[in-house]
Length: 181
Ligand code: NI
Image (cartoon, helix red, strand yellow):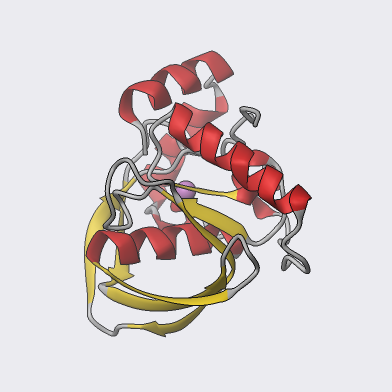
């Protein structure tokens, strides 16, 4: 396992096209291990592979954010596909490890059904509501290159750019270690 650097906005890598995982092999499991270590280091709620410099369509969500026990390992979602997003929505502030210290209100479906592969390469189906459903939609957005920035209004966008353009790695880690996602 290794800690990876979290790619931060406005790094253009966050807009690169992602691709499906063909085989869930040792290299994929090793990438997921790194993602878990990186996310846990900053107490994040979720992390997509593209945020640590990998273009595979994978994201992880912290177990407690996914409605499980705090001590459970993060949930892993490979090649995720939404089968259902409820028309009922709500708006809540979201953070993102690629946007340290930034929060943007985002409208999301209240419930979701997602098909994905687990770490054994087995197809799984998950039903999620509320915060878990929101986290799934946020992380899935990363795979589609949709970022928190895109949900912000014009003035907030300027503020985000100003703040993140001049943020150093040290400042970013300091903020993330104190707030998490
Ligand atoms: Ni994010």
